Picture: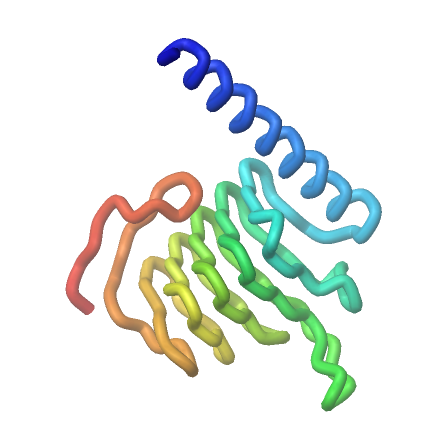
Length: 149
């Protein structure tokens, strides 16, 4: 039975990664989004399709489920680019508002609302998001070093 479990897991993971890659390529080619290499975006994440060319995501970044990346605000008729750096982690149910630039190696905690620019190498949390700690990250925004702020 252990062999069947490993085969099922392998097929499931490979199929999911294949679907994620197809979706990212669709975002790039059909919507014109600027998405770097090695990026993983959850199937439940929401990227702005009203201003898709305003979405810029750096290499090796991960966007978790139910995160929303907005490049427009219909209540103010604003269309502004959003920049997310390399090796970032955008947590579950977080919201990145239009016009925000997030530096490289940033971790956005789950449920955070990012309303202003975020410098590189930090962890932000809250509503509105504030810098909590300094961090270093690796591929997909996985924390490799955590320092007091």
